[in-house]
Length: 424
Ligand SMILES: [Zn+2]
Image: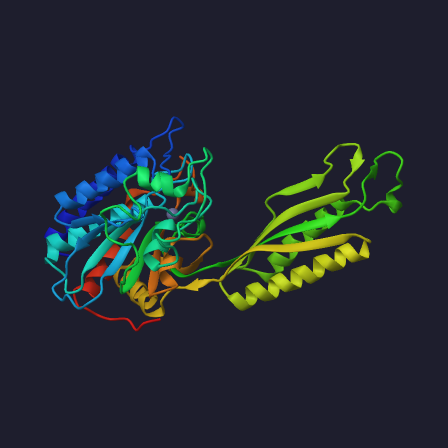
């Protein structure tokens, strides 16, 4: 590697730390975390600060009507659609410094680095700081990427409220956005989307690998299982005569865990919440409901496992003389990342001697919204102890920089040659 490149990379390594730290000051909370909810003053200040940084560093910066912020490094061939990178800057309540912010900051740095090293690309490169991904203020997710992809529109703003009864539209207008604002319309065309993100799991750290190349974002099924038995006296009802909904729900939960272990990776099944009724220590529970979250990268395997489980749990209830109700309330199919970009990223890691693996993402990301329309890819870097959505969220600078290098190299190869991927 040329000496000039090494020095420049060192400078960018310092910038990475500095900007992430600086950005985490917008919405810094008392618990040492970051709380930056959509359209709040902290969120507005963070987007405006990033916009100013982009402009100071030679990028065109502009908002759309939803509040997505784009930084653009214009290409020499105006006929080529832009290649887009980025992530989101909204956080959960008391979140960390890296989730979302890393992809935005690394994207901005990638564009300024490429401009500094090589001048303008052939194909325009954009970095987008999506306005919302987490669903922490309003009960909706991917409001940012969903507006760009056309899943949402300013003509049909969802009628949702935050905890204080403020509607999404009111909050958006107050922050200076919305259908009458002077910004560009949200829905637009792009060529390819590549997102850099922390893993939010412990696979990379435990396997001592620096980079995860995501092959797809898992599909999800969420179900509420309700078991109906008979409530009765805990002292006077002999064990053999009971129709104990909580005890049978417990058997079901054990079955769920065992069958998921048997099915193996990447299938995961989780019961995260259980409600017995009446929920009193000296009364046999007459009813019990629990949540069930099932995820897999392969839609067929996901559906087969889900049907098998529904059948098994129904059978457990029937054998015990209880009734069971199965109500699916979320059904999201997996989104596969683009095979050519995956191969490009694998090649970049191999030739740079970076330890990497190809892996699914068990969490949802903007890449699944963008990737449902156009070719997309995701690059993961390790999360210390797999911790995320928490002030303890941390990724070492060395790892942040490996991700930056892979993203930058791929953008260079793609945008400076003006390559095209076939349309999905
Ligand atoms: Zn995120």
